[in-house]
Structures are given as structure tokens and as C-alpha cells.
Amino acid sequence: MAKTRAKIAELDPVWARIVREAEEVVAAEPLLGGSVHISILHHRTIERALAYRISLKLANGEMSEQILREICDEAYSSDPSLALKARADIQATFERDPACHRYLQPLLYFKGFQAVQSQRVAHWLWNQGRRDLSYFFQMRSSEVFGVDIHPAAKIGKGIMIDHAHSIVIGETAVVGDDVSILHSVTLGGTGKEDEDRHPKIGNGVLIGAGAKVLGNIKVGDRSRIAAGSVVLAEVPPCKTVAGVPAKIVGEAGCDQPSRSMDQKLTGCNCSD
Image (tube, rainbow, N blue to C red; front, top):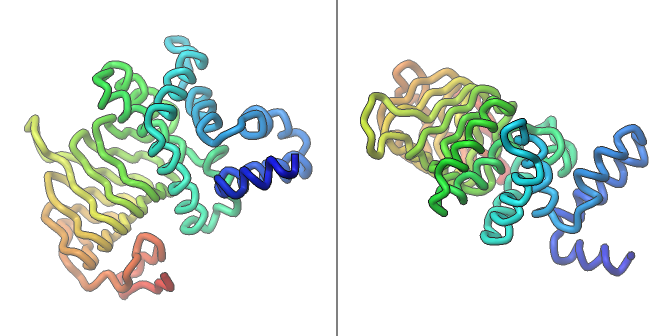
């Protein structure tokens, strides 16, 4: 058993850490033993654990947990990048969210992480041409998590959605890598056009709580959008925008605003 765990740790350090933390939870809080075992310790891989967690959360009277789990298993087996992105999301959440003290917390407790993983499966279904099933995933994710991400939206890796209440991301939106999004953010359109109509968010962007980014506009890499802003025009890279409508108020202040999570308009402190 020790050799097996050492091999797992070498091949998949994120999953190995989650398993170790799960064992610590069971030892410290036996009342959670059943839940932790069935959610984590019962599974051999993070892919299986993700499939179980998503299916458990999204199942209802219309679609059973067993059917949803088979769909998720198929998605993770067909596209290994789904689980790789999930690992990056876990690490991003652990590094950026001061309320996250263990790797297993996003998998077990954080609806932002769970909603993004559900959308990744829905996006896989969308690309397979299984549009109605992908819409079911979107509907249930919105009902369960309060996060409404269209299955066609393209979401990068290393995504951290903090609190994740009332997040809306539209059909033609693109979110780059290493992006941090706070609650009540909308990446939406501005009218009834049926073409490319949603924002394109660059890498390393920080989007503050309540911000609305509307229309087919580009938000440049490593920029910051202040809380409560309404962004209607393109944002250059490495800038901070604020206001209604949002205007450039200064530089982003560091190379990685999405990692520093500093939302002060005077700049940010970033050690990365």
C-alpha cells in the first residue's frame, strides 16, 4: 500500500494530496467519514472523483446520478485535458483564496469550482454535437450552484471563481488562463445579435465583484476590472479600469493581478 501511494504521489501529486487530506478529515471528524469515503477515498483517480461529484450534484428526477456519472466518465476518458484543467483550478483556488486551506476543499465544498467542472463536461458534450444534453448540464448547474455558464463558452485553466454567486458567462465568451472572477460577475452581450457577441478575457485577468463586461470586446492580459464596473469598451493589457462606464484609471500594478487578488485602485502587491 505504501508503494502504491508513493507511486500515485509521483504521478499525480494533486490527487495524492487530496487523498492524504481526506484521510486526515476522516481521522479528525468521523461523522464525515462516509461522505469523504464515497466522494474521495473510494475512487482511484481524480477523474473518477470529479465524475462522481458532478453527477451527485446535478442529478434530479429527470436525470439519474448513474446516467450523469456515465456521461462524465465518458468525457474524462475521451478528453484528458478536462482533469488537467481541474487540477490547475484546484491549485489556483488554494493559492488565491485565503479561505481555502486544503486541496480537497474545492472538490468537496466550493460551488465555483464544481460549477466550472460541470461546464467543462457540458462544453465537451457541446463539441460532440450533443447540444440538448449540454443544455441540461447548464440548466442544472444554474439551479444547483447559481452559476450560469453557456456550454459553448471557452474556459481556460487555472480559473478561480470566489463565492461564485450569480455568475453569468455567455455563449461566445472566452476566458483565458489564470483568471480570477468574483461573485456577481456577468460576461454578457448587449443586444439580440446572434453572432460573436460576448467578451474575450485575456490571461491573468482579475474581475472584481459585481463587474459587468458586455459585448464582443477584448480584455487584455493581466488587466484588472474594479468591483461594480460596467465595461463596454476594449481594455488594454496591464491596465486597471473602473467606473460606469469603465475607464482606465491606472496600470494593473503587477504582472499577475489574478494571483495577487489585490483590488485596490492604487496598485497591487504581487510576489509572483
